[in-house]
Structures are given as structure tokens and as C-alpha cells.
Image 1 (cartoon, rainbow, N blue to C red):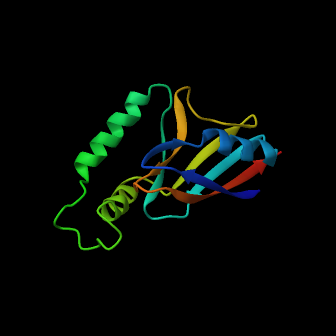
Image 2: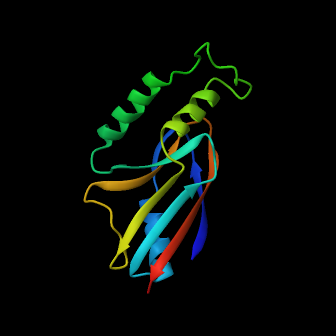
Length: 137
């Protein structure tokens, strides 16, 4: 089964999508298999990160902002704003796809793990995420 989710991102940051992915897995009826999640964009990414303490997310975002600052004079791709090229670099340093095992009909995530769409742009977007579920019923 394959589904495309449209995820509205009102602003920059980590947006948890674990529940939406889990619903696709449940609808697929797969007991054991693999869930692949793919984002169809170059200025946003996917990560698995702690979902219990929001300070972990804030620290990660702050670290990435320091690593890849806006307005770096090395950037030549600037037509879409100061946050455009840094968003591409951040997406290149993270992931555009994730693979999560399915065990007993559920995503085999750890206790504190969540799936996040990481929006790297400041303005709102409608991000498209493709979810494929393969396995045994």
C-alpha cells in the first residue's frame, strides 16, 4: 500500500507526523514488514527524534541554525530568500527518506522516538510525504 500525505507546516521547525504514519500502517493491515517514508521536497527533511522532551528538539534546531546560518556570503542561491539555501543544506545533512520496521502491526519505534517532518523554511508550506508499506498480513 502506498499513500501520499499532505502535511501543512505553518513555520520552521520539527512537526511530528508519527500518528499519521501509524494510521497508514494500520490501514495497510500489515503485521510484519517495512514502512518507507519519503518527502518530495529539497528544503524540508525527515528525522526520527526524541518525542518526550521538546527541549531536545529546540537544542537540535539551535545547533543546526548555528551550523548552517542564514546570510552566509558563500551562498549564491538566494533568489527565494535568506532561508532558502540554508534549508537545502539542512535537508542534505539530514534525510529525505526513512525506513521503519513493522512488528506485530505497529511501527517498531523506540519508547521515546517519533517521526518528524523538519521544515527548514520560515514560510508556511504544504509538504508531500509518500508512505509505502510492504509486508505480510
